[in-house]
Image (tube, rainbow, N blue to C red; front, side):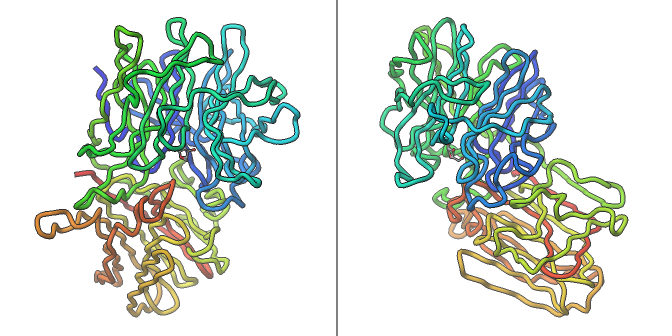
Length: 504
Ligand code: 6LW
C-alpha cells in the first residue's frame, strides 16, 4: 500500500497537476515571479518525489522579469499525448496563455507558444488552462474566464472552452461557457477526464482561501452539456477543524495501487483561530473513490508529514546549484557566481535591496513549519545577508557589512531594526522559525522568527519577529516563504548553508 504523505510536496507548491506515463508520475506546480519556473517532480510510488527539472529554464519562456508580484506562472496542466508531454499555463500579467512541449519531462521544454483567439489577434484572456483530446484527436482548451488585462480586468466569465488547433496554437471558435460550479466565487482550475465513456469536468470554486473546494460535473461529450454532481463540493475544509485548510484546485490520476488519487493545494494554518499559514499553499494528496452512481467521492485531506530534513550546502563540495535554488524575476545563475572565489558562492550587490522587485537574492523554499537556517558569510567587501522573503513588502533578514550586523523586519511598509557592531570578516547568520509559546493555553501565532549572528564564536540574539507577518494571509500572497542569501552592495560570499526543519 502506498503511504500518502501530506504535504506531498512541502513548501510553496500550489496548483498541482499530475500525469501518469507508463507507471511514472510527473507533477507540475506554479511558481509566479520566481525562476526557474514550473518545477517537474517525478515519482514511481507516489511517496518519494524527485525534482527532475523545470519547464522555464531560459529567458523568454516566461515574461517573469517584468511581472508584478503574484503574476507569472499560474496553474499548469501537464498531460501526455502521442508520445509528447504537453503543459499549458497562464503567464499572468506576462506573456499570456501558453503551450509548452517536451519529449522528456525533465526538459528541455519548448519556448512556449501563445494560445491565440480564433482571429489570431491575441492570447486567450483567461487563466488555469486545461488541455484534453477526444477520441478523434480534437484538442480542447478549457479555462477559467478571469480577465487579466484590458478594460474588463477582474471580470469573471466562468469556465469556458475552445476547440484549438494545437499545431498553429489558434482557437477554432469563440469561447463557449461550460458549467461553472455550484455558486462559489472564482470557478477555476478546470480539468477534463474521460472515464468509462463519460466526460467529467472537475473545477475549483470558492476562492483559494478558506472557502476553497472542488466540484464536479459530467456529460457525454467534452463540450458538455454537463450535469452537476448532487454532492458538490466534493472536497472543502471550510468551517471544519481540519489542520489542512483551503483544500481545492486539484487534479485526478490513477495511483500506483490502481486506486484513484486527487492531488490538490492546501495550507497548514496555525495560531489560536488557525489563521496564519506560514509556508503558503503546498501540494497534498487524498484518495478518490468512485461510487456506484458513477460519481467520485474525494476523502478529506489528512495530515501526515514526512520526517524532518537536514539540508547542508557546502560550496567547497557543491560546485553547482541544485534545482531547489530559485531567484526573484531572474534565474539564480544570473546572480550566483560559483567560480570567482572557489569554495564560495559570490553575490554582487547592485544597490537594490529586498524592498525592490529584483533583489540580488537566491533562495530555497521554507519547507517545514519549524526551521533553523545558518549561513557562513563573508561580508568584508560588501553588505548582504540571510533573509526570509514573501515578497518585496514582507521579509525578515539578518544583514552584515559596513561595520554592523542588523536584524530587520519589513512588514507592509513598517520597519523594525536591531543593530550590533561588527568589525568585518566572516560570521554566521541565523534565521530560525520556532513554535510559539502558548499564551493562555492557545498557540499565540503561527511561529516566531529568531534573528541572530555568531561573531568570533559568540551568538548574539538580535530580535524576534511574530511569524504571522510572513504568512500567506498577511502578505495576501500566492507564493510562500523563501529563505535565501542576498547582496545589497559590493561582494558578499557564502561558504556554507545549513537548514534543519520539521513539522512537529
Ligand atoms: C490560480 C487559481 C488559483 O490560477 O489561484 O487556487 C491562482 N487557485 O486557480 C494562482 O495560483
